[in-house]
Length: 596
Image (cartoon, rainbow, N blue to C red; front, side, top):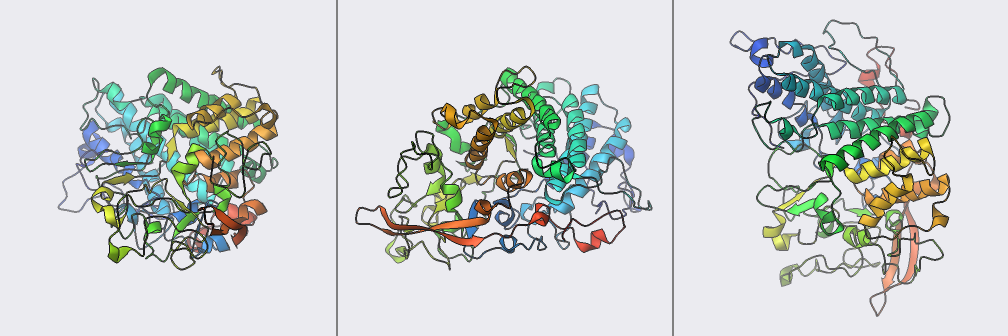
């Protein structure tokens, strides 16, 4: 999304816990006042616009993967998070030396800094709304964005740190702090209320209002919209009603049926809007990869009709900053950290007949484990012998090898700079992105979506299942949980699941857990899903497995053995990140998370 050109430059570090001079205080030589900023839609939108640049792009904020992939991936140099140390938050969450917003440099943004900064901006926008001398539509756009971002940034913070004070007004610099922490469930419900307000105010597509508002750009696809707000309203309610937050609220390790009903109704409304307007559609299988990456030197971006919310994009630069050094790092054999999928996630991909590999009727052959698997397996996972480079490699670089050698002792295997599990993944790193095809690789555009329509279908299925039951439907939408699940599976070219695997609530939930693991693999969903379901501490999710094997004469793996590479440390306290001590020492009502 191309931002409105800023009319003013406002710099103010305004966290919840620190005082701040008024945004509009000015130096003697400044000539900008309230009317200059908030009187016209164009300048007011310039003020609001900065909230978009506070969204942290996970795949550019340093070593983002260390926090987000739970049991999905492993690195040859294990991160401290797998060892239970959540205090080191500098890469993604908190780094005081980085500061707030940091302009257009995505790698320097941090969640904690930018979220509180944006929340204050949202509250200031709502307080100054009466100064806007604009049309009804212009006021709706400003207020809708403010409510959306106030909810979104509170929810983003709470997903990591748990319940927080919900700041719905400007805090004066001399105000004595006494706001207590809410539970996660309470925080998420307040965020849902803000999303609901935003959904009432915002259009499905900004361009629909082009007759009423003079836009500075026609590229409005990634702006806060009704569908974004509805989607996140449902997501916040589903998270609030999930077992871990429900147990934390003293209501037991189970789904809250009422909150799930509310979430299901909102998701049903979301899907209705998409059906009626065509604003968002599932990609076909043939162009599924364009959700995540495209080759484009002219600025075209991935996501298409399916991504509802993505990270803010400032320019046309590629995901990888240095082609060859990090595009993709897993192929180059010159990096200290090589990220690869675990056997855990590889084994979750179904067979081509749609059955899990451990189903007795699946046809899975342990001696030929990579044959006859579902299409997403071949789109996502690189196995031993797969081509990784499309051109001949010069003799001087033959050591790299264009075909994967992932068997034990192979060229791309090992603890120093190869795969420790026997696999690579390619959801964001397609073949063609390497130092020998630099002209092609330099045009790669790859992004992790924050939310896409497939996720809405799966969340609708989950919320409806636990709110309305196995065969229930929500808000007159007419789609059962199984219908929604099969909508996503059929897009992936899979036949329907047999009734014996989905004829109870428990079995269908197991199928949903598997489907979310695969459809949303490597998209920063797994970490949050396992925690909110209260299952992240189960042994099968803590043990990260690798595959050790030799390559047989026919190229098939032999002497196959699954081994535990590392066991993640995960106790109850690891459901939430700890707060930096400087914040919990500010006032008594702001408590540290349990166990930290």
